[in-house]
Image 1: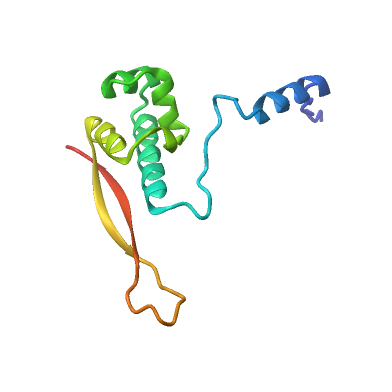
Image 2: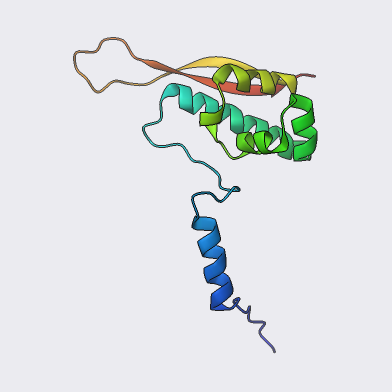
Length: 132
């Protein structure tokens, strides 16, 4: 019985790909949130993810989404890759609602570790549903 062994690409090819993808200016890099992200950053990132999920669930092209929300393709890709610094919260809300994504603000309570704090702070979270 023959066992198929996968061949790795040549070292030069692997190194070239690694170098390209680790370049800070590589355009197709998904931006992750920092652990200490503010509530505003978390909500902007959440909306970007909901727009990307909408695109994937509906098998839409970037061009179709860009046309629907009246952005250029690079601007639309900025949303898909989570480049939240390029958008205000109200702009992202507008783009999501223009796609038919209904955003709902909900309150999430977090416990406080400070013994002097009596109220629990909340962080707004957007949940999405689609218009029917």
